[in-house]
Length: 163
Image 1 (cartoon, one colour):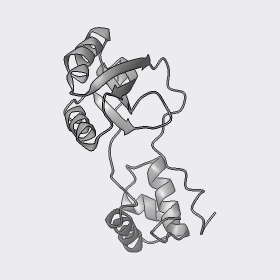
Image 2 (cartoon, one colour):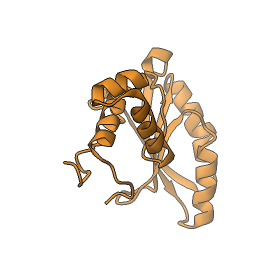
Image 3 (spheres, one colour):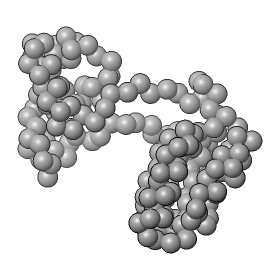
């Protein structure tokens, strides 16, 4: 159950903005069947409540020369809060790290998504930065050959009050 009550207009706003975040308020209002002012208020409420976390532009990695995308599984030596805090602080300083997850159910503690230009760049990031973070004891890498599904859209059909 979610902490914010969403009606059919809110859900439709979310669905439309996930499809196309560049919609103007007027275009969005027309698509969901509201006038501009109430549509704008609803979007603001969704932002203020944290349901809309952010609005961003997605850049194609390959179009800017980042041709190597890697998934890394990172193992840590100690499972103590200080070690995790240090790792998370240091990994956040590496701009090539696009995603970082603390995970369970695997032989690793973290999963990273890293975007770089080529294997030499990957080597520099891995050996020059990631493995130098205190507590990192192991790294297993997998390289993305092709994106099969690439979305940031959250599935909205789980919202129980309006399926």
